Each structure stands twice: as structure tokens, then as C-alpha cells.
Length: 496
Ligand code: HEM
Ligand SMILES: *[C@@H]1O[C@H](CO)[C@@H](O)[C@H](O)[C@H]1NC(C)=O
Ligand SMILES: *[C@@H]1O[C@H](CO)[C@@H](O)[C@H](O)[C@H]1NC(C)=O
Image 1 (cartoon, rainbow, N blue to C red):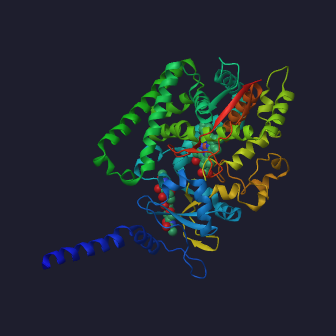
Image 2 (cartoon, helix red, strand yellow):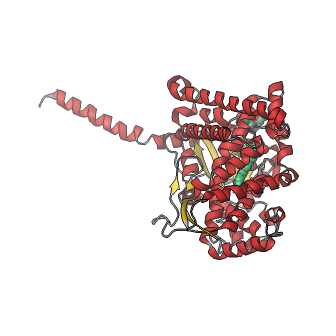
Image 3 (cartoon, rainbow, N blue to C red):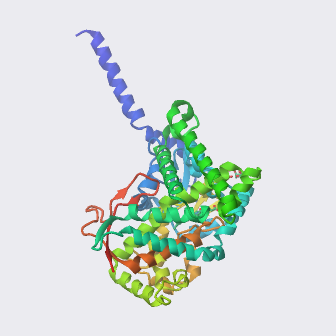
């Protein structure tokens, strides 16, 4: 046979071998390389373990979109293990003891730059209150703080209640029989527009439509963050000019929207939050990008969070008809002259409040909390963790797979909160964060969502059409087009 053919054959064979070892094993090679670059060991010198690196974004996508499953799967690597956000190591902690140890110097902590989400994410949210540090953070938080204290929220409670009642009435104003609705689609606009009203004052039809459309554009842009890859780097400006344009036009329109609202509210309703926060921007004492991205965080990033929390709050009550009935009786007996009372909606000592906490416990909006770091080295789970390493709390392990919650941890049993001490909750319950950087909107979110559920139960009984659970996993299907996957569940609402 012609020796040329053999040569070609040999080259092909070598090429195939190379492909198998280099290209298909590239994840393995990168894994090995990253382990050498970032050694973390325990006292016996054992390297920290964790799931193998995945081409091309590490575990960034899995962490958000498949968090519940990954939390269970990765727990096999130990109580402390390591994952990767692209090439950046993140240490996952899963026990209350380690959360306590990590947060012992919480006031010194810094948020990881853009949550380790890369360049594109930085353009959208990198400068929002939740992700900046030090003196910048103090200043931005100081500017917004006054509107979100417990007192301020209580003052706004009648307006929240009014909006909740109107929203609930509109869900099925025409039909008198039971209706089936998609939970997330039906409920999501409530927290969105309730928060918008809190920031901007009452909005006209046109303003509402414009704001919703901006939110949808923001959501579309978030998909590039989830895509990762080139979007993690500034050079994507050069290669993806269409996307870069979309980003720039969005930022311009978002700024214009806030400017327009400011101009109309300045004289008509000067007490609005937008007036007091946009004024320093115009005067040049606050950075426009920080304020815009913070409003973006409150409205757009939070749309996913609040609607996830509300959807689960209602879904868990729909699944647990006996608790729902008892809660409805509590609502009924708390009425003052036949009207739902604000005092009851905001009470800290009621079945309502226990149901709220229990739904936050069972369905944390993310299985992996926002990465942050301590400036001091830490010993976590026996490993020597260097200063400034990104630490992520596995909220699923804290809220559910945790001995404190007992053998019935998977059950919706709100009564458990009636007997638990607040000190026990401190590191055994993730909802609004643990340390100094706790959610600014926690009082507002609690008041808004509890008030909504009170009005909902006052008008409807809520149930689940059977069978709506996804057959294999025993859980509902998920819609995975945002960074907080929402459950794809339907509800039956029957007027009372
Ligand atoms: C049920 C709904 C909500 C949940 C579960 C929630 C949860 C959280 C969590 C876990 C954090 C991060 C805390 C940390 O990293 O330590 C956070 C931060 C934040 N949240 Fe919320 N949140 C909710 C609703 C809201 C609402 C409605 C607003 C605003 C109107 C809001 C505004 C903020 C802000 C501004 C931060 C950054 C705080 C800072 O870094 O100083 N949140 N939230
Ligand atoms: C916050 O501090 C961390 C650690 O010092 C740093 O990596 C990060 O870039 C800072 N983030 C911002 C937005 O400045
Ligand atoms: C941690 O980050 C801070 C702030 O960026 C820096 O001053 C410090 O040197 C860093 N420490 C280590 C051990 O890298």
C-alpha cells in the first residue's frame, strides 16, 4: 500500500488521541491547573474537594438555575467544598457553625466584585448597593435607608393594603366560578408595582407600561449574564456589537425614565423617594450609576426574588389546605368592623407570620447566597481559608438539611416558629442575609407580601390542580429563563 496513506492514517490517529486527551479532557486539565493555583488544605494537608470544573463557566450557571439539585449533589464533597465561577474559586459552607464563624467579623466583609459574574453583569448591577463596599456602600445605603426603616414602612402600610386589595379584586373580576391561573405570571406584578409605587408614588397607566417594558428589557439582558463565556469580558464590546448597543440603549432609557419621573414628582409630590435620591445625582453629590443600579436592583433584580417568594408563600398554603383554613379564620377574627386591619397584617406574633417564615425557610430564593469575603483568614470545616476568598452559604443546607429543624424538616409546619428562640434562628435560617449587609427592604417586603396574602385569602380559597407535580422529581417544573428559576405551578382560585 502507498506509504502516504499510512502517514495520513497515522496523523489522523494522533489527532484523534490529542482530541480525546486535550479537548475532551480540557475540563480536567483546567481543574488540575486551578487546584494548583489556589491550594486550600486542612491541618493534615488534605486539599479541599469539590465538583470538577465545567467548560466554560465553571459552576456559575448550575449554582443559580439548578441550585436545589446541585446543593444535594455537591454536599457529597463535604460540609465545606469548592466550586468555580468561571476561573474564580468560591468556598461553599453548609453548616450553622461555619456561618457563625464566617460572620464573626461581618462588619468588615466585602461583596465579591460583581458577584463574580463578570463584565456584563458588572454593567447591569456591579455598582448597586448590594454589591459595593466600604465608604461607597455606606453613602448609598445612607441615602436610601430612611425610607425602609420599620417605622417608615408602617406609615406606608395603609397604601400597601389598598393596593393589595385592588390587585386581588382584579385577578378575576369577571368570572364568578373557580379559575385556574399560572401562579408566577398572576402574582409577579404585585410586588413589582407595589415596590415601584413605594419609590415613585402612584404611576399612570403609561408610566406603568413603560416601566414594565424596561423590566422585560433588563431581563433579556440578564440572559447574556447567564450565557457567560465572552460576556464575562469587556472585549465582548468589540465582538458582540449588537448586544453592546442593546445594553447602552437600555441604560440611556433607564436613566431618562428616572429623570422624567423626578421632573414630574418634584413639585407634585416632593415626599417621594425618587425626589430625595435623584436630587443628589443632579447636584453631582451621588454617582448616577450607583443610584440607577440600586433602583434597578430593587425593581428588576428583585422582581425575580419577590415573585419567587410570593409564589411559594401562596403555593404552600394551597398545598396545605388545613393551615390555609386556620389562617383564613385568623384573618376573619382579626378584622376590625369587618375590615382587614393593618395592625394584624404587620403583627409579629400570629399564624400569618409563622406561615411567612416557614415558606421563606422551605423555599429560599436562591440555594447559594451572594458571595462575600472576610479580610481575615478563617478556619471553616477544618480548612484554612485565605483572606478575601469568596464564601457562599448553601441556604438549602441551612434552612432544610439541618438537624435544628428536626425530622419533619421537609414538611410545611408553621407552628415550629412559635416555639423557636430568635437566637436559634440567627445562623440557622437564611432569608434576608446574615450580617451587616442584611436586606434593606426586609420590613417592606414582609409587610407587602403578608398583606397581599391576607387579602387573597379574604377573597378566595386557593388550591392546586392535580396532578401538577413533575412526575420524576416530585417537585414542580421550573421556568429557567431568569437567575431565580420560578416554579411553573398553576393555582385554582375559588371566590368565597
Ligand atoms: C421577600 C423578598 C426579599 C428577599 C428574600 C430579599 C433578600 C435579600 C438578601 C438575601 C440580600 C443580601 C443580603 C446579604 O448579602 O447579606 C438582600 C439585599 C438587598 N435587598 Fe432584599 N430581599 C427581598 C426584597 C427586597 C425588596 C422589596 C427591596 C427593595 C425595595 C430589597 C432591597 C435590597 C437591597 C437594596 C439590598 C442590598 C443591601 C445592602 O447590601 O446594603 N429587597 N435582599
Ligand atoms: C469589594 O471588595 C472586594 C475585596 O476587597 C473587591 O474584590 C471588590 O472588587 C470590591 N467591589 C467593588 C464593587 O469595589
Ligand atoms: C484583602 O483585600 C484587601 C482590600 O482589597 C487588601 O487590602 C488586603 O491586602 C487583601 N489581603 C490579602 C491577604 O490578600
